[in-house]
Length: 171
Ligand code: SF4
Image (cartoon, rainbow, N blue to C red; front, side, top):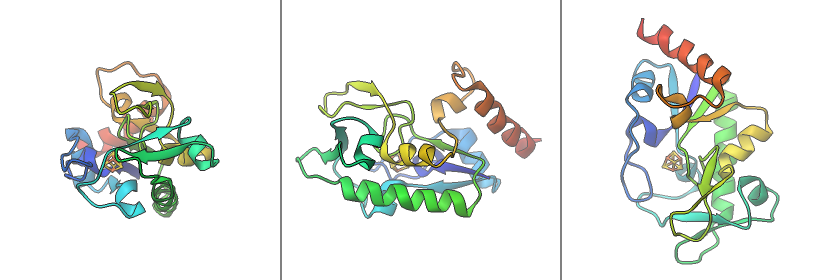
C-alpha cells in the first residue's frame, strides 16, 4: 500500500483551497492501491488556512525544538505541524505503507525542498516536518516530482518500487 498526500489525489485541501492533482496518484487511490492523508488537517487545521513556513532550519529541527513553523501572521504553529506528523506516522504504520509520496515544498510534506521561512518563494534543501518524522522512522518518502515519469529519478530504486505497484494496478 502507498500513502499519498491528499492534495495530490485532487482533494482541494491546500491552504488556499486548491489541489495539486497528479492523475496517476488519483488513479492509484481509486484502485485502492493508495490511501490519502493530509498532515495539516490531521494536526487540527482547516481549509483555508494561513500559509506557513519553517524558520530556523527544516523539519528535523522543528522536531528537535530548534526550528519553528510560523504562519504568515507570525503565529507559532509548530505544535499542530508536529501533531499532524505523528498522526501521519501512525497511519503509515497502520496501513503498512511500503512507500509514501508527499507533495514537494510543503512545510509538512516536502521531502527534498521546502520554503526558507521568508515567505518570498525561495526554497532550500530540506524536509517538511512530516517527511522528517517518517524518514526518522525508516519509512521511504518521495515527492510527486520523483514519482512522475519524465523527471530525473534521484531515488531511482524507490521510484521503481512505486512504478511496479502502479503497473500492477493498471495492467
Ligand atoms: Fe497537501 Fe501535505 Fe499540504 Fe495537506 S499538508 S495540503 S497533503 S501538501
